[in-house]
Length: 426
View 1 (cartoon, helix red, strand yellow):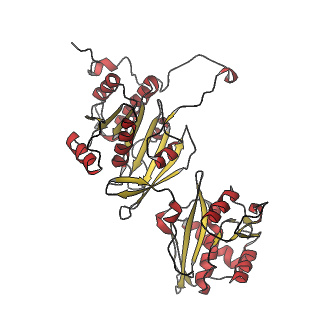
View 2 (view 1 turned 180 degrees about the horizontal axis):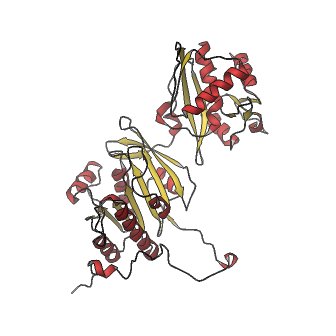
View 3 (view 1 turned 90 degrees about the vertical axis):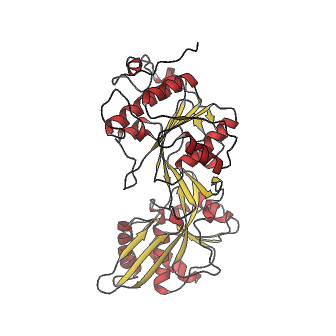
């Protein structure tokens, strides 16, 4: 005879009610009397994933990861679970979209033939919770939350009610038992996580798995993390043996030009705590009466604003020109520190003159033509110098107090000053 938790729907009714909180309740305590403890982290063995998570998995933490179909979510998590299992952690992979044989076939392709990761092919919430309580794994993956359903609800799997309630029950279980749970979520056509918005509020960490299926590179981006920095980024390369971390991601976003070419300017952007060098390319060509403005990886509305600033304050007119701007490597840049690099790339393409070799620029440009500082400018400059860049045009407020070895820094306050510096360098 072996004791087991009943998987009947009624067995969970008292333990999990719709009105139950996600975290266990406690008495009223003054904030100063609560002892703050650093959370212990368990590394997954995937350095880039650990970077995004803030150092590793946290006991009782709930992670939601979403991405396009076929991007590599299941592959990454299976590799992470295998690494955790080999380090002595008890792991469980719950698959609702594949059979156990299909998971084993993927593991064989990834070279994980002898993996001891426990696999459960199940979609009923009550049976999944029963197994989690019986097996008590350290880390469990639910792939995916949209396939899980509860018998207590009559709606179909993947509906708003089912996703919300199933995620709430699993989150409550993680908090009460200390099991770290990773939920795989589907995304909509627009790229947002499918299901109710409360799903993202409920969990501790939200990760987005991004990348072009035609490219071998993938980005894992954290947009919410209660245990670490937000907007961190991890870079992976898809290989025959699965996903491998990229230790020097700046090399991906820089084109290999034998000599400088017109319309190209390298900038240093920040992704979380990581400075990345990204090449901004611009092409300016005669466009006729209705010129087009197109940007890939950058905000198109901001491009139109920058063109107006360029004309008004620097005297460079592109009113009858088509302007195309691209961030190399498929990266998306949302911070305004790219403004100066975009303007210099556009001017370089319009005049047909390349920027000097080893040149970088960053800085926000205002409507009055001023060049505003970018956060953590010193780290950006040091990263560029480390990769061999020798000339920089940056905001005056970011000028280093001590000279950076091997780098000449030109600090400017206005757009016209930056244009004059570049003309002098050329």
